[in-house]
Image (spheres, rainbow, N blue to C red):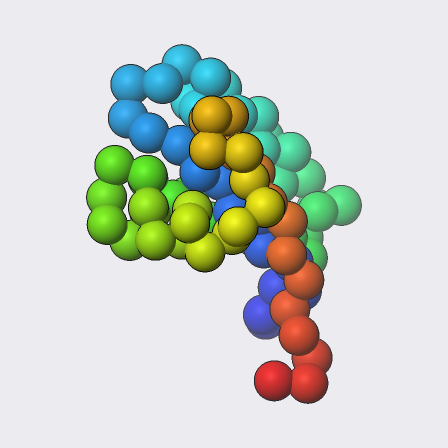
Length: 76
């Protein structure tokens, strides 16, 4: 079943705050209450992660980790 919401987490290796955010989200998303959400981790030290981070356009680049919640477009 496709999830309706995606939580994009932008972080980098070796970042304690990034690790903590991922752990907290994983724990939260393990609860069936949040079954309609999925998490996608974007490592900004990779080309793919950096492109995803830049494409978000609304995140302060001085604030890592960052989190963006998106909703699936039902019309696409």
